[in-house]
Structures are given as C-alpha cells and as structure tokens.
Image 1 (tube, helix red, strand yellow):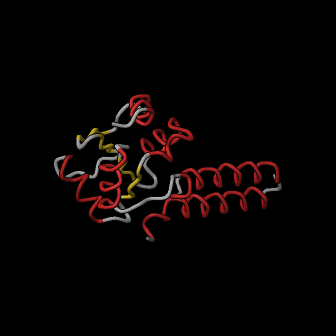
Image 2 (cartoon, rainbow, N blue to C red):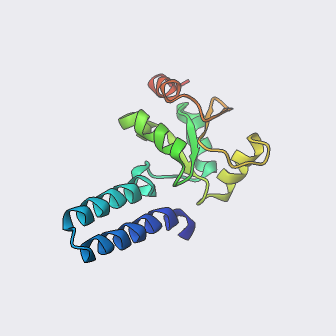
Image 3 (spheres, one colour):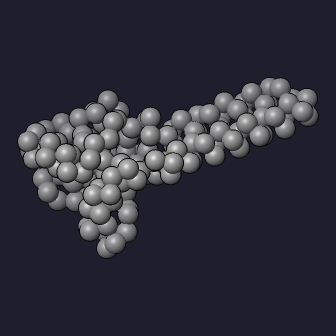
Length: 145
C-alpha cells in the first residue's frame, strides 16, 4: 500500500520544499507555480487517476463474462498513464488490476513478460498485449468479444 503512494508523496514533498524556498527568496508567484505543478504531478501519478482496481482473479472472471479487456498497471508508470488518458471515459469499461496491490496480478504479468513486471499489459480474449497502442485498446473497448 505504501509503495503505491510513494511517488505522489515524494512529488508533494519536493514541490512543497521548492515552493517554501521560492517564498523565502521573495518570489510568491514562482512558489505558487511550483506548488501547482508538483500537485498536478502527484495527482497524475496517484492511483486516484485510474478506475477502481479489482483483483486479477475477479478481473479475469468478469472479462470471461463480458469480453472486456483486463489492464494490468501500476502507479507511477508513464505508459499506463498514457493509456489511461488516451482511453478517456472508455477506460472505465476495462477491468483494471494494480499489480502493486494484487500479487496474483503481478504474477500474471511476470508470466507473460519473461519474469518482468512490464505494464501496461492488456489481456484481450486470453491473449496478452504488452504496452499496446491506446487506439487499439479503445477499439477493443468499443466492441467486446
């Protein structure tokens, strides 16, 4: 649980430190801009940006029922964030598994990536796709199998 929040907390701490330094130097506008930038970085790297995660077993069960893709991800992953942002509102149609919170999800990703936890790994109809094109994933969400 702590590992999930480490990047956003570090962004907030760094931003606060830089903002305080800018305030002490007498540049409140710079302090405000720095703080805002780091708060935004913390936000996009937090698990709050992603749809609610489910366990890998539950995601696979749901996927077998409704044909929607399963997306394995982790907080702080730029490629996961890119996929999430490019999917927009459709992202909620997929089943998201946070591999840092779900050991079965992490094991599933390692099994298809030669022991590496390479994310995003998207499973569609039982076939894994590592870091797929967001347009392709969007298409899979449009017409589930």
